[in-house]
Image 1 (cartoon, rainbow over the protein chains, first blue to last red):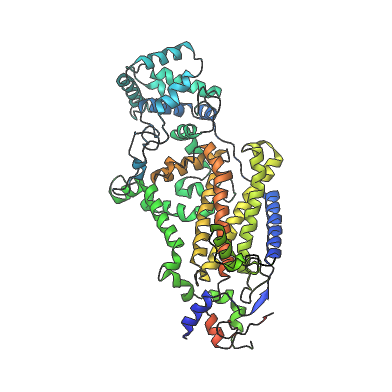
Image 2 (image 1 turned 180 degrees about the vertical axis):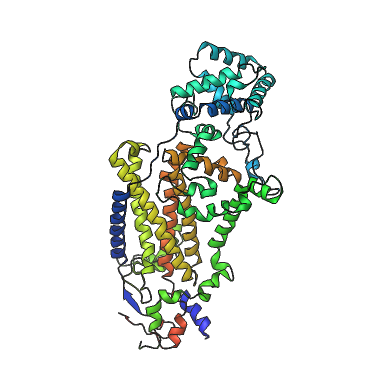
Length: 329
Length: 229
């Protein structure tokens, strides 16, 4: 029998060669004791991260103009949430990998209607000052087309870089209907703290789905600025990092790595870089899926499965065993 | 009793009998709870598998306390903060040990000798652990969880998974983190460990060469077995 065939035979069979005493239970108990001591020491010395959650009240206090502009954009349908697409709404198609559009295929599974869910319904859920109540009534009695005209006109005027540029006091007179008053009403509601907790399930007792709060908060600059300050942006290894100096989800490095590449992190507006950056999420997920499959199926992939033989680090692991080559049985 | 039927000598016809016979044949007690290991199992690298399991036990223990008190307890209680810290560091150690264990098994080519399923269940356990950790990070109910939920949703939505696995939904992730993910991981870990016991620890890559040179001998070549130490 050749050495190679004999090696395969040894690997397949239950080992009946030399053995040593080895108490797995004792080893496990010692390992657990070591881990308990280690975690207690690490927890005692370093504690754990816990930066308080941002609030909509904090947003209203810190960046009221931004909250105001975002509210208008929700009514106008120009916010990130409004144009997100599935699984929240049909405001966009989502990302694509060539002809593959799984985001679109899955459809709207968690309906989010930003104008109503983020602005109208929360305003309706509480008693409002008379001007806001009147504005709300005017909005609700108008046709969808009229609502869109008011909101779009005001959204455009508010964000005109050569005009108001985000300053509501500089918006020229126009036919904006109840939009400015409603936006003021929502900012006032957020400032009082009344908006926190209402977005998820206005008028209902239980509230466990935080999707709408997360989306609304993310539409503005408040969350984004806080993440930038904490070095949590995607081009700084993103959510893999943790607040403060704590280790984060280091195991996401193979995932976050791809977002650091210029091709997936480009300012280009045309060409391959623009396409890859705009659709980075699906391209990177596809890469990760392939990487996972390669790792899972490694034992069956010629070449890759031979790397441990080509780079014989196994000689370190089994150095005592190999050292006995030629010694007495 | 004289004349009693000798059921054990007959081929099992029931499902449970077939399972019992298979377990008795492939996983006898001395394989499940052996007092010896092959002589080549003599390196620190072998410790990291059991260290990973130990860290998992610590994660479950500290997580159980946190689950009893709810996801916001640790914001307002020093005891809660300490248990959160235990949970946090146990997770860090778990992944550290698991990656070292994985690298060790890679360089040993531990999938040899019909052990591919052991490798595959280990890799899937790693992937499920990453998912379990993600659900843990988004139920922290703090700024970090807000940001992670906001960021992670885009990747998951991009491939359609987000339609059902919604990281922005606290309630869904809470349940997944304290029940579904640990349950899946527990099954994978049990299968992984049973496969290790079933096939034994993979022999050295040059075992046949050692044998040919007059070193340790495996019984199918000569019927002799040797107590090494």
